[in-house]
Length: 192
Image (cartoon, rainbow, N blue to C red; front, side, top):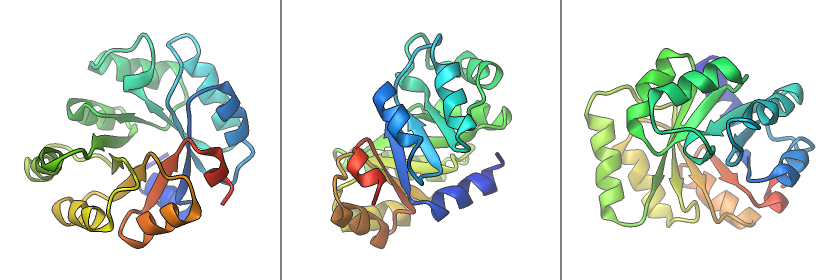
């Protein structure tokens, strides 16, 4: 799936199911969400997890940092490209983004916004001229509205709010303040 198509799919379906176990996988396949974030598995199970998502007609994004047996090296991305049907990756490691793009994978760079240093890192990433991800995902997603607007002002990359969003008001808060989508493991939110 080309980057433009991926961005449009996220924007058209702004609630993203993030799955952390097989039960979540099965439930996510029954939702209307078009994109699924895979937050579990290992090198033996990830091809099958991705295949189930792809067979359901959904976009599969693998959080490579959370897959047992993969490292934070380019070879892990080669494995994802060659051994799975994944559409892309999620990572906290900005050094993986250029190689993922070379391989034709869609990319999400995840930041934990815990203090002002996280904002400095987002800003550095936006200014340093390296290959940019397709999206930035920031956690926790229930961050104050002014922080969402601040992240949007310092980065030209669209943002996804992830984590701790548990109801419609949390979804609406993130979307109305500049996030293009939200991701959550909360299955109740998947069906809003």
